[in-house]
Length: 113
Length: 115
Image 1: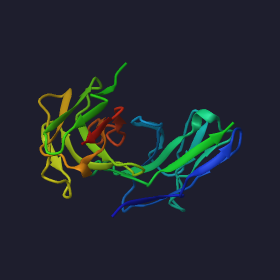
Image 2 (image 1 turned 45 degrees about the vertical axis):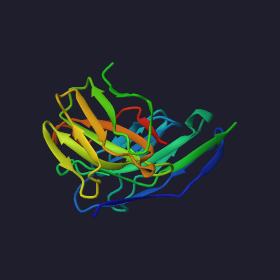
Image 3 (image 1 turned 30 degrees about the horizontal axis):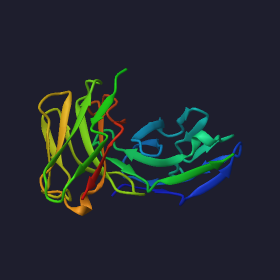
Image 4 (image 1 turned 90 degrees about the vertical axis):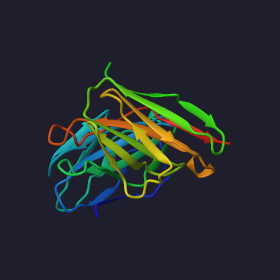
C-alpha cells in the first residue's frame, strides 16, 4: 500500500539556519503531496501542497517540490525562526480514490534563539 | 472565517463512561473525517462520511461510532472508553473527490483524558 517516510527527529537548529526535512513516498497512482504543521496542543494546519510532478508548493518561506523521479517531497526553508518550532508531517492523498491521507511519522523541529 | 470547530477542546471522562465529541464546519464540505492521534504519533483515520455515506476503517474498534445529522455537524461517540483511548481526536473536512477533495482541513482537536 501507499506509504510515507520522513527523516527521523527530533531536529534542533539555531535561528536563521537552513532547514531540510526529507520525505519520500511510495504510491501506486499519482498522489497529491502535502506538508502539515502541528503546533503544541493544536490540530494540523496545511502548510503547503503539490498535486503533480514538478509542482512546487510554498508558504510562509517554506518550499517543497514534487519529484516523481526520486519519489520525494522534501521541505526546505532558508532561514528558520523560533516560531517555526513544531511537528511537521508529510502526507499523500489519492485524490480519486478513498481520499485517505497517509501520513509520515512526523518530525519534531526545535529552533533555538 | 470559514473553519472547522471542535468542542470541547479538552474532555475528561471515566473509564467505561460514554463520551461524545463534536465537530462542526462552515466550509460546506461534503466529506468529514475523524482521526485519533496518540502522543508522538501520526494521526490515524477512524472513519469518514461522504455526505451521508459512512465509511469505517477496517481496524477501527466497534467502541467508536459516529453520527452526521447534517452537512455541518459530525459526532464521535466512544461507547465505553478505555485507558488506551486517551488521545487527541481530530476532525477534518474536504470537498468531494475530483473537486479539490484531496486537501483536508483540520480542526484544533479535542484532547480526551480517561481516568
